[in-house]
Length: 251
Image 1 (tube, rainbow, N blue to C red):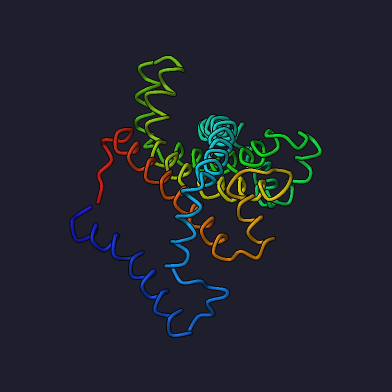
Image 2: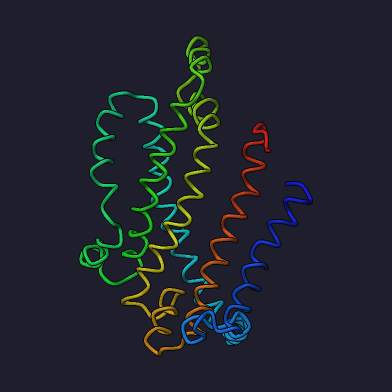
């Protein structure tokens, strides 16, 4: 990213905040529904200094990490298998096509019946959403690998483990990272939705509690916390991608 692009990236959110503040000050926006950014910042600061923000963020982040690992690893392996084996692909494609469109939030009550009201229901909600995205993106990445690399690997009769780790996985990494970035958004949505009920901690609970108390400033502060969490995770993925895919030219 050039200096100019970096400057634009920094200026974009600042311009939105300034426009929001001006719109509220001039009564173009209802301050009861859209508090000014200054009021949201004050509420966010109070939320952070009270210790609630750190506690809720840690709980939500733990549910994100565990659920993503539980769903992402099998999803990646399934995508690798579907990308390389036409019989596995013939079996898996219709199954994914049938199950993927089901709203994951809609099956939360079923997950509570199966896993109870503990943490595993929340892990499962995140894992299910992540699984499909990783499987679809990984399969697409494998099928985009230049066939000449596969033919050379087979000509040299390399071992299956080496074939997967030296040919398939590196070739599919760009798509895998794309799937991971998409998964972050879905995982956050599902984790926050799962925290609306049957829990007393997490950013989702903070949003739900602010709604119940009609505390609009605190509600926006919790939404900002969710947004910052997603931004931080995406930025961390971007950093690891630079080291994991050094051969990929960046524009």
